[in-house]
Amino acid sequence: MNHNSNKLIAILENVLKATIDVPQTGEVDFHCTLLDHLDENWRMKQINAIIESNERPHILAGGINSLDETDYSSERWTDIVKYYEEMGKPTPKVEVMKYLKSKQYTDAKDFAGECESVVIIAKGQNVQGTCKYGTRVDYILVSPDSPYKFVPGSYMVLSSKGTSDHHIVKVEVTKVDEPIQQPYVRRHRHPKQKVVKITNSNSSKGAWKMQTLDR
Image (cartoon, rainbow, N blue to C red; front, side):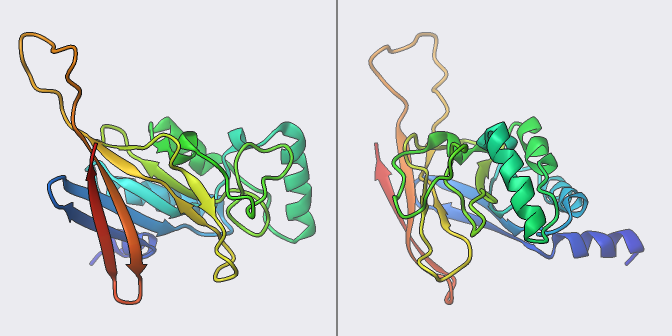
């Protein structure tokens, strides 16, 4: 094994990839990751390796640990930078999220519904924070050309209730069927959709309960 292969393994060791076959719906690829919490340059190498290792459409979720500057006003951003400096943390960076947006990844945040009141939104930002510093560092994103889309109004941040220093990010996913090829369009017929919910997880056993609902 050459040096480059060893470097790729080191970069990819923090990503879990799974293909889940949902009954009557099909396969969906999940990439779950936790990128480096200090170095944005290393995070860029990690996210590039994740993307380049699989060209199939997928859902990317986890601790990206990069900020999205569109979440914050200029005043809030100034406060965040100052706060990070006081805490001895590296200056917050946005390059990874800019890169993912340039790759046409869709952010689940744009499909937000009601907020859980216990997860407070700081003044000057338009989304709930997901970590103890009040910023959003955990994301759910879907790659371009994916048949899976986020359900409007289903995105939420839920309190982890002290079980973690990060909160829980949740969204519902629906598969949009490809339109039937025919010489005319039936105006009163809509593509059938299926909503996939994953509930009652038991991470210690690797077990997931899934429910598929017709719509």
